[in-house]
Image (cartoon, each protein chain N blue to C red):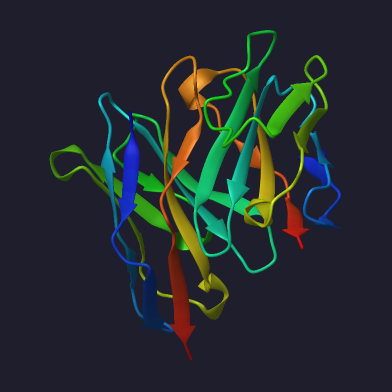
Length: 115
Length: 114
């Protein structure tokens, strides 16, 4: 079946503007994650949604970052008043709700460049 | 809390020779460990995972990893490198029930010398 999809694939924006990134998880996957990958670095966890539970926002770097999820489907990550240090690849992953046994499948990412 | 340390940021091997990418983990409970690979301009792909079953885990493309609790290690190996193995490799540990977020190592870039 279809994998995790993300849009846009690339986004260039000016400092101070707001951006919205979208993630479509694999159908049936109730767990959804957002990660950030800065150039030459590993992934940093941002936020985690599991079903109807309150999301784990412990990885969000500042209050300029927020994320929403509609039921168990699409999620959007919003960055307000973007800064140059927000430039990174933003990756979304989804998994079944089986806890530690379940594999996270990653989307291709959105490459964000803040000028 | 859990963490992983990838001991080498860059590894170069000749084609046809063995590959060893080192990873040590820290976890307050029995961890779930993964290796992911990222080829240039491509998404992350799961190579293999350990979730408390067999300690020697076989993955795709001839890779395998051995979980050694006494050494808190989960090194990735392959008997014979291929040019297509050139990529960035990430060792990853997963959180426990209630928050299965992944914690990534800083990555090891594998270069294959023809």
